[in-house]
Image (tube, rainbow, N blue to C red):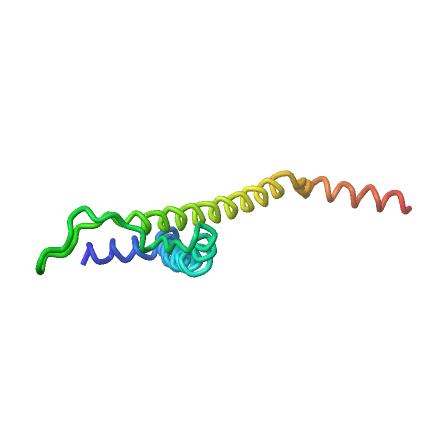
Length: 133
């Protein structure tokens, strides 16, 4: 039972759960970016370049023979994947830049002065009472 208890403590640690949430959100974000590149960004770029569909760009190394499939180098899919990566990296860069600027603003904000010790508060009250008399 010791191993199960250790695993439960490990899995329920805050940073492990946060990491898992980040991975799930990152995977979903990656799908969104892939769709954006494939369905929104690449068609106009392909039209500008003369109707080229990047996903169909390939170079056949060896033709198909019988039941043996053709050996192809699909560099168009690679180009789309590189564009996906650049967009995801840029989006993450912008998020980190925004987080760093917020963190800097927090650090630059002046901290509230510490509360005076109890003795000083009591002496101030005594002084004010003596002034009133």
